[in-house]
Image (tube, rainbow, N blue to C red; front, top):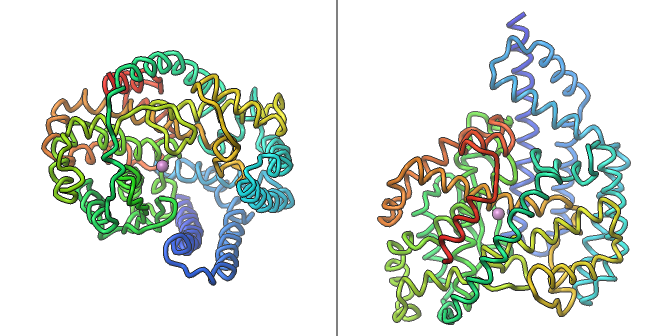
Length: 499
Ligand code: CO
């Protein structure tokens, strides 16, 4: 009996790894498309990845695979705890995939292709109402998807859980509510205090080559293993991996905006370190996969903000930075540099927002999505509601649709429920950061000496190496910090930094 179970488990591993082989092969093609692919290759490349993804999907939804997983679960006594969790999670994935009828998946993906095109057109004309019919159709399909998945209390819960298992309307309402007033107050104080910050030096000419060399230096300093990954240039920075031993990060360079590359570079390194810290031995299995989108984002924001916008970090690295840009930074002190890279300013564009106002951008998108999927807001009303919320939460007038409700690609991809993971990532990061400092009081001294090894080791041990079998985000948060996610640690972190 036991032998039989181990036999079945081996069959499961083999099948799961074959699916991973195909998906990672498709990921190599996607990475190439964003970095080096010549333009004329686009049509052939679209076929190639579609074929591979279709193949992976067939293996993944194969009824025999589902039966094998069920058979294993029925014999759970003969599996180790980790093996049982792997099978459970794979079964969960299988059940979710097979809940959506093929015809629906097909219809949704066709509508997404069309919606993306109409979003591009709408952006060209700077007119939301070019996109509105597609948005309306996608919202209807997403409501249908929520019905297929099933949900409690609010249909948006089904879509949230598709990205973030432990998130719910109830949880997010509470977090955003607990954040709003303290952040508004902090914002007013900070704006009054920082009037004199002159950050013009960040917009001088920073040559491309020097920025690239500086970025590569930083990537190595932060602990990214270049024998198990690379950095390249792409239009939009991203991280992808083909195994824990091959992690690709990308960055972009703007010669007239120093901040653009450095912190997106640190951000992607944070994602990359997480991927490199996953268990290579568990390739293709849940125990070798990242835990969740929020935990992934917590790692990028931890490095980008808690470390990369930290005064102690720059006490060590600013002199090194000056060696790359002696002219541009010759009259700048580390304090002025630090204040400039942490400047707060309510603004229109989410991706350019500072650490504080960023979360109002997310809260607004969360409210809109909740209302759209809940049926209390129609697609036609999105623009008006968007502009109203920007006035209310950030105090700014939206001058046009491109800088308003057309700025993000997410909805045209059918991604409703994704935005909140960005805020959750920051909140988790701050709670981990506070815990690390309490557990290892020497941490800040180490940062001031450019010693980041113990920080990475702590993240590796507590988060990276555990993979997805450690549980959902909230389970991980409680295991690491002893408490569920709250905004308190984040508010303390920001208040201390900005005041
Ligand atoms: Co990220």
